[in-house]
Amino acid sequence: MTAKVLTITSGKGGVGKTTTVANLAVAFASKNQKVVCIDGDIGLRNLDVILGLENRIVYDIVDIVEGRCRTRQAMIRDKRFPDLFLIPAAQTRDKNAVSPSDMVRLCNELREEFDWIIIDSPAGIERGFKNSIAPADIVAIVTNPEMSAVRDADRVIGIIEAEEKKPPYLIINRIKPSMVDKGNMLSVDDIYELLRIEVIGVIPEDENVLIASNKGVPLAIDAKTRSGMAFRNIARRFVGEEVPFLELKETNFWNKLNIFGQKD
Amino acid sequence: MRDNPYFLIKGLKEGILVNIISHEFKLSRDALFTHIGSNRSFFNGAKMLLDVGDIPLKAADLGKLRDDLADEQITLAVIISSNEISMRSGELLGLSVNPTDEKKKQVGKINKPDSPLWMGKTVRSGTRIDHMGNVIVIGDINPGAEVIATGNIVVWGRIKGFVHAGKSGDTTAFICALELKPTQLRIADLVAVSPEKQDLYLPEMIRIINGQLVAEAWNEK
Image (cartoon, rainbow over all chains, first blue to last red; front, side, top):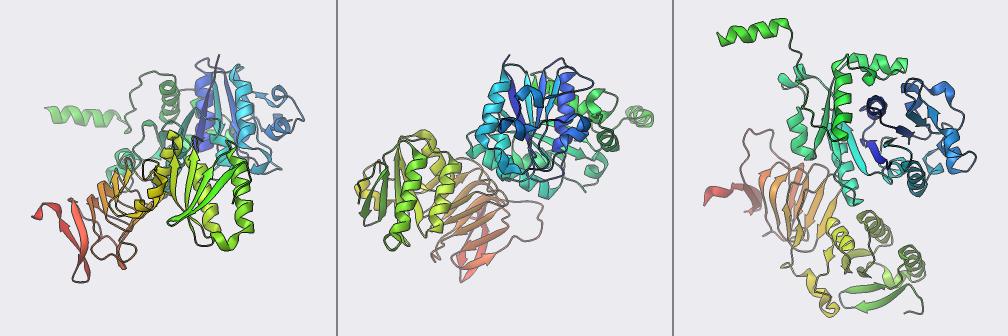
């Protein structure tokens, strides 16, 4: 087994990186892939909370890097999926506790055992971001349909190109079809126009995401919601399946009736 | 000026040629900055031509070097290399790359406006291209990117970022693009911003006519 290292980053904060990492992780795990998540946000860790594993942390990534524990000891096994692990960030240290070459070394050590290593990058373009993209084979950029997030994504794409990485993929999060229709929100096409990188997923705005995050149960565990489905589809695309994009608009009974009406 | 295993320095009419000999770029770099630190008067305000041989230099590293040199009041203008990564990095940063087929004697000639900088892809936010001469971009100039030239700027794509042609005061310089909606545009010392939203953008050329910036549709003549 040789794992692929997937780094999720964004430039701007609060666009849904950590949520995406958690949901992709459970989506991969439910496809029987062996997954380890690494929280790259040292000092402001969140991934453990969203995965619901906060109270199991004994060692963290800084302990590994500074030799206070073996890598195995810092890996927390998920409650639901035996093949899903988390390496948490340290909360009491800062980004400088780990270097890009430490990250490369750690990932190389983990590669043999896993299918996917998913790194949750912090916001910004400084040390923590550099640490997170250093070992990446694949980079995915999360953005929201708002101008400032798209600008920051563009900046990050430029940096990733300069690092001689493959072109990153784009995940558009929190899109509201009704607002797009009224011309009050950037559409997927608008965003693609500016960034010109492959869109690998579009997640509709959904309050269930927040509810699930607060409970520590990522939504993609089941395919009951549209957003959960959208996250699962991203995972399927990453493993090479051809998955059509979800219709963003909900088609309810009355809409369908309307379509029939128009045909006649 | 030598006796170190890391680099050679030669003063040319066009600037200071630094030849990196060691393959340990980090060490060479540190040694170079120590040298600069103890010879400030020699380097102050100088233009640097950097020959890195076949060492692969990532754009991030080269960009850092350029910024650090700028802090020492040194302008990194030219990169000479046989390594493809280093050449690409140079291009990405808007430096003149291998300006004279490695005939270093002629290095000064790169500053003639007839050696344009070729940028074969979209210039993204955070990238700054500053070139002595003309600049040709095949792709967009995104918001947050800056393209500055002493000559003209020609873009086969959309200008949405910052562009400045004729920066040393050349009032005959022009800017043309398939779609012109820059955050700000300058020619010589005149400044303009895009008009409010238009529905339709046509290929346009902007230049100075009677002391004013004027945009003309490309199909006019």
